Length: 266
Image (cartoon, rainbow, N blue to C red):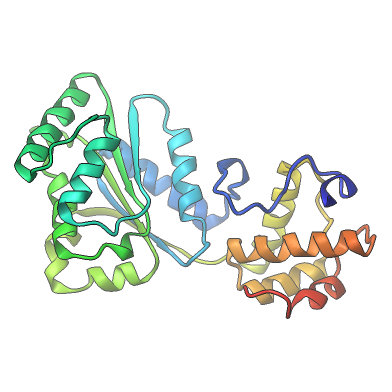
């Protein structure tokens, strides 16, 4: 609909975590660099950020950029018991019919880790929305994953991603053994006003459009309404393009943004 009108090949502000649209702000660049290091060192890493800050997109960009020799296993819904967690992990690692007992699962996982090591493969376990993990037992199993190691190297990398409350949860003394094993950690802050402008222009360019479609006064209003959170920016910008198209507006200004400000929840 609005794509042809604004000379776009595709939707520039889709909410899907397409790494092509990952805007490398200062904090996103630093987060990706730290996760790279964690994967290369086969370490346990913690990445936190608010809803819509870009954590999942960064994990996709990480997977696309590390090259061969790494097998990524994503756990998107960690509301699991300890046994369910281990079975899902075993399945993601390629075990067709994982054991239904903990002892059996641990034996199978151990064999799989050493098999991967023998083939030069490093499993990378990415646990998204980790603040939703329901029990200490699951966190204990995550900690124990770091015991898969040889004398001189770990056999896998683990990345915990979640909202800021994950840090609050892990501050409980009962999780101190896990926290001591976290080698890399980073928190994603929101974009600045300048970065919000760069973010919008970057995504327009990736989608085949031209920078400057959103005028500075429109960007300012988007920043004020979104707080610099990428997913909120996407929501406002998409609605602005639809409104601009309906008005036959060649450029998006603050009048269009203000007309939308009460029409959606950001």
